[in-house]
Amino acid sequence: MLKKILFVILGLIVLLLVVGAFAKKDYTVTREVVVNKPIGDVFNYIKLLKNQDNFSVWAAMDPAMKKSYRGEDGQVGFVSAWDSDNKNVGQGEQEIIAINDGSRIDYELRFMKPFEAKNKAYLTTEAAGDNATKVVWGFEGHMAFPSNLMLLFMNFDEMLGKDLQGGLDNLKKVVESLPETIVVPTEETPESTTEQ
Image (cartoon, rainbow, N blue to C red; front, side, top):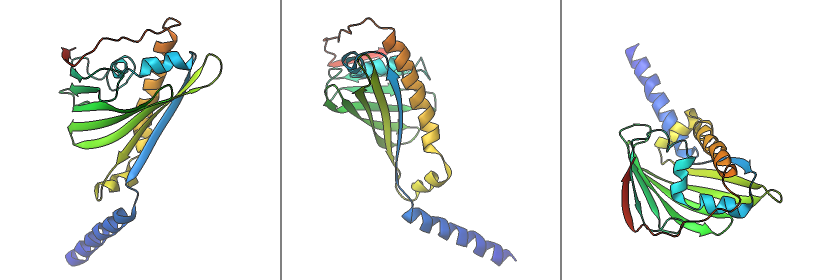
């Protein structure tokens, strides 16, 4: 009887490994919102990575997290790093890796704690009328075998989607409350560190 149980367990493990070898390893989560502001105002606001602190759900999870910055905000190569004792926040950094002015910003997310991972994210803007802008926030992940088995049992679209949507809803409120013309700061921050 014990041998039969062991064979069943072994068979299930083999089956999961086989399934994992052929299961998807990449996933994409996107959410969108329409902001009642001109596309120029919206893009100039989201172009600044520091402004994510004003609308990102993740940024609000730990007001005491340590933050540091490298480079010039709103430019390719700018890095925003964080370090938190909150396990839901952890430690990592986000870098602007590409900007298509007026339409798209690409980021690389590098997580160090509580796990190591490297993912891509992006924000896009598209005119949705004379005084409205559609903003899409996307997150792209990759899980190598056998970690990709988690994708069979966990709904990443739902898990990450609610946080992306929450951030976009916050962005809508923040940007719609700003004056008509958004002035983009020109100050350089080659190496600065702040604690909140």
